[in-house]
Image 1 (tube, rainbow, N blue to C red):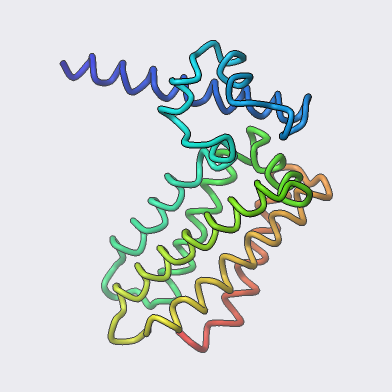
Image 2 (cartoon, rainbow, N blue to C red; image 1 turned 90 degrees about the horizontal axis):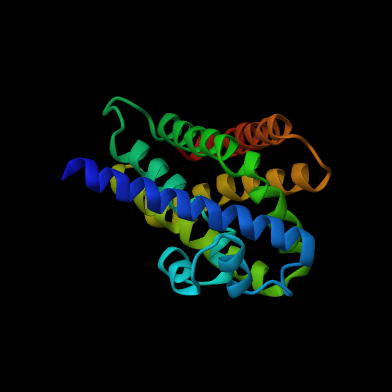
Length: 203
């Protein structure tokens, strides 16, 4: 039974990866707006119904790796050493998320594609902004709950917004100028260091 469950999970993961790969290729070759869900499903050799089992919308393919990355960031805060300061925990959280991005969508081409589309595709821009705000809210809430006696909700929201916003802006800039994955990761870590210096006094 365990083996069967494991096989099912592997099959689901392979299907998800096939959908992402097909979407990246088609968005690049045909353009985002000219590519339909049916096109992506056909290119991945699955049905449109299977596509929707993995992604609610076409825009969500562009965010394939972000949910797991956010979970890992929240896990860092939840599993913190009680002796760690908020600054130390937040620095570790953002580093884990940057490392995850480097190992994932920076290498698949998904991050570079997002960076291009967010500039000139309103539907993608709106979806990414909504997703980014939700991610910041979740991390800020986790930070506030971990340090209720030291960080209020407004301070947590401001600090996390500044940090994650800086990292995202640096990543988009590096991707748009054609930096390789190592260069993008370096830009993200530099942005995180700059932002952490700016907010360190508030932690």
